[in-house]
Image (tube, rainbow, N blue to C red; front, side, top):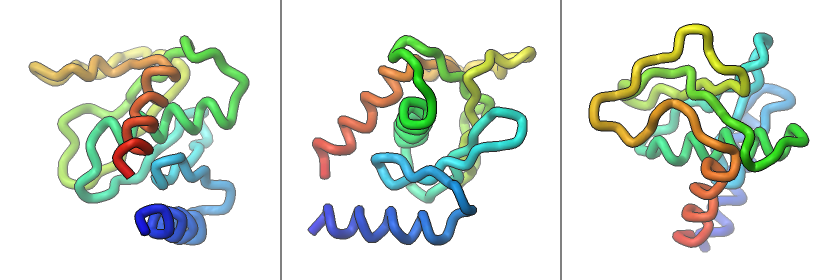
Length: 124
């Protein structure tokens, strides 16, 4: 039943999103921006690891990259409410400060980001 819901949710997100939007393994949408960055719109009650999963899945699916490729988070944490997260493959000129006590340093390899998708798959 969860798989049917996930497929239906992914289809709804794909239909609701802009043309060409990517839908990650965890059903989150990823929107490419004109400046080369990409954005995962906010969804209520999603953990930061869900956004990293979507970013990693997008990068791996859209580009020929190695699992060691670094993804940079452009959005500060903590994010208010259900605000989304922006990412880039280019290191920002002014890196955002790390949240106090956070394990999320603002950058992660594609391989590690995609590993959060595997956690989602095993829970569903």
